[in-house]
Length: 299
Ligand code: SIN
Image (cartoon, rainbow, N blue to C red; front, side):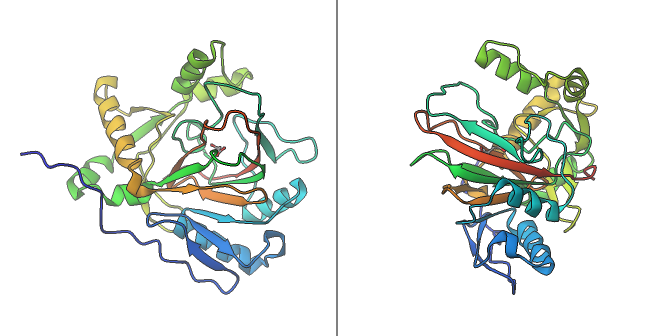
């Protein structure tokens, strides 16, 4: 007899990371936390190290009332690690590693940057480790970003299913995303640059269950936007598995949702999360800036 699906329980452990440099207030049961009592440019080196530990624990952390300049955003980001090469966006004139993500009040589009569940640029051989995003201006409601904890999602699979997944490699490619954006916008969408385009389409094979480089924690490396196959499987075999893992991972219980305020900065761990940038605030301007930090080859 089949069992009715009930909300996952057990293994929820989002208790606050303890630091002598700031306070931490968890956002939800699954993940996410607000860091309070500090302005990012004033953090000591020990404070930055502690902030990274808080990030590994909570997967997404945010700080209100930071009001960083582009230069401050770049300087802080550099303290997290070297910049990644962003596959999609271009930097500002003042700071080439600080990338605008802006939707104007009169812009109506069926496809928006980051509008599907994804982890950042997993089609690259070395996808970014951390992404940071700050808001200058936002809608009075809507425009919330949502994340899901892919380590918690992995924990909530049966040991038999976990063992089945562990040896598998997932093929991450930008091909399905280009095709979808092209369909939605009615014009060809790609990276423009031929070498980047070819690399995006070819994509990369990564472990479907990856081990966090700093904590050793296993997580599902799955992505609704970019996961395009499983090594050694036919499309017919791989698609239902990918669809199941995405559906499992984006269950409400594993997520948290951030309501932005101007001046806020957040950062997330791409090794252990997927996220979704919403397209639900037509008529309002949303001005965000983002940096990405280099990551190694997922193991
Ligand atoms: C992103 O996918 O990086 C953008 C998220 C957002 O705009 O909320």
